[in-house]
Amino acid sequence: MKAVVCTKPQDLQIVDRPKPTLPPGHALVRIQRVGICGTDFHAFQGNQPYFTYPRILGHELSGTIETVDAANPRGLEPDDRVAIIPYLHCGQCIACRRGKPNCCTHLEVLGVHRDGGMQEYLPVPWDHLVKVPDLSLDQAAILEPLSIGAHAVRRSKVDSGDLVLVIGAGPIGLAVMAFAHHRGARVITMDIDERRLAFAQSWCPLEAVLHAEDRPEDRLAAITQGDYPTAVFDATGNIQSMRRSLYYVAHGGTLVFVGLSQDAIQMPDPEFHKREVTLMGSRNATLEDFATVRQAILDQSVSTHSYITATVPLGEIIHEFQGLVDGQTHMIKTLITL
Image 1 (cartoon, rainbow, N blue to C red):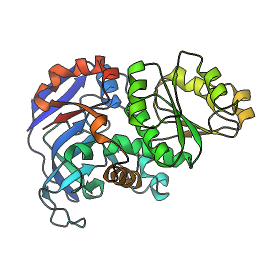
Image 2 (cartoon, one colour):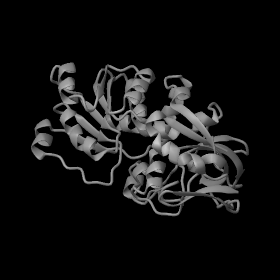
Image 3 (spheres, rainbow, N blue to C red):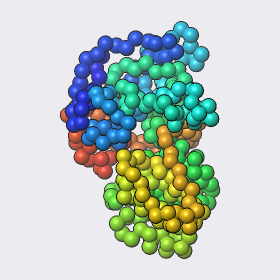
Image 4 (tube, helix red, strand yellow):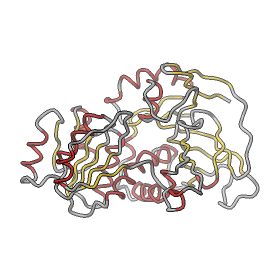
């Protein structure tokens, strides 16, 4: 079978590998869609935390069941359409015991800690497969990035009528916007890229759009009569943005870091304390979040058509990948097709 391997930073290769065998407790999935994520770009560029080389990239995945272990408690059948939950957890650590497998102490993410889905076949544990007969393969592949946004919003406990700020109008920030709005919140977004801000306005009803380099703190103060948003989500992964985000949170509000950086985050303690800010990290998503997103797609609360902006066949990705890295702000989500 064909597989795309990131052998080292700046180097992708298409290789031939044997078709995987089927371990107990798994189904063999014929991969048909792979979403390209910021994680993949960072791995290619050599600045992705938790990453080792060589690695087959890809964790935003959908496909069809090829074969399944005979002891099959999930009722999976050949040709069933599935989305894949790519976070492999141990089931025994303190996070797993408390119902938080998304931050398992031994977590292995497909495409990061283990080989991912840029290959024709992938064995996946039964309990990490979501049957989606009512979604297209394209829609199934973007359940994962949308679920990350849904998870961050659920963690924040944003409620109807709350005013929230989403910093970063990339794929994950857009997912946060959509599901904050889905819960009845009023949404402001901020970015440095005019094209992404324009897309955000077509994607989700917004209270305001702010350019991050045009006095955003003053503009937020004016918009909110000095109150500031009760929840701020930073989905940039940019350390300067993350450090600055504290100044945008209302007193008594919540700050959620959805993006990830390798650098240390420094904040002035007096500013943090006087606001009595609740600071949260948000990592990955859970089956509950996948279910929330699936229902939102079925209800047409989320536009999957506009979220997917390009497709590339697997055989062309080697030649196209650098261009995708360079043009990240021109697109929202690119899918590899198999």
